[in-house]
Length: 350
Image 1 (cartoon, rainbow, N blue to C red):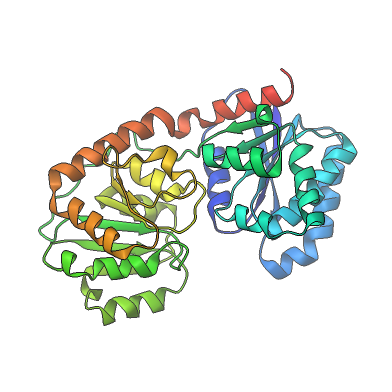
Image 2: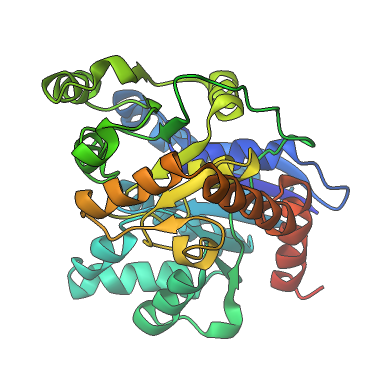
C-alpha cells in the first residue's frame, strides 16, 4: 500500500511519531511524508501552495490512503482543509488523533465548529487513537461509531539490549524529557526535588527540554538544588539516547498528555517510571507493578514517590525491569508499522 502521511513539521510529539514510523519499514507499506505546517510566518505564505500541491497529488491517485495526523487548534483547522481535498478527490483517509488537550479544544468550540470537526472524523475510514480514554472520548463525545475507532499506542526505538547502568557514588539519575512548563508539571518537579524528603538522599537529575529553561534553573538555584540538576535545554535524538542510557528513573508529572513518548522511551531503556495517570498513561503504567503513579499537581506525593525509588534500589530495579518487559511486549517499534498496515487494510476493506 502506498500511504501519504500528513503531519505538522514542528518540534513535538507528532513529528517524533512520524520520524519513528519512518524508522520501522514494513514490506506491506510504502510511506511518503507531506508536511502541512512549518515555521509560522513561512507556513502562512506557503499554505495555499501546499494545498494545491496536495490536491494534484490526490488527483493523480498515487496513494491508496492518506494518514492525517491531527492535534488541537491550528492543526485541526489545517487538517479540515486537507480532509476536504481528500473527499473532493475521492482519496480515502484515516485520522490519527494526538494532542493532550484535544478534549478542552473541542469542548470549547461553538456548535458550528464542533459540527465541522465531527465531519472531519466522521468522513474518515478509520480514527486512530492512543488509548482507551481517547477511544471513549471520540465515541461518546464526538460521536464516532466504535467499530471505526482503532487503538494504536505509540511505539519508539528500543535497544536490543539495555546498556549497563554505571555505578555512581552520586546516587540514581532522575531524567525528565519534555517542555519545561506548567503542563508538564515542571514547577512541582523542582519543588519535589528540593523537598526535605529528597535532601538526605543521593541523587542527580537532568531536566532536558525547551521552554522557560532560565526560569526553572533559577528556581532550582533558589531552592538550593542547582548543583544536583542539569538543565541542558532542548536535546536532539542522539543526546536523548545518551541520557536514557545513563538514567535510572524517568519522571513526568504532567497535567495533560495523550501517550507521552518520553515515558515509553524511558521504559525501553529500563528506567523506572514516576508519572501522573493522565491521558492514556493509565493504560500503560500500573502503580506498584511497572512504575509509580502520583496525583496530578501534588508535589508532596511526587516527592514521596521519588524518594521511594531513589532510596530503595530493589524496588526501583523491579519496577524498571517490568516496565522494560511491558514495553517489549507492546510498544516496540519493530511491530508498529505492521499494526498500521492492518488498520489501513481494514479501512480499505481488504
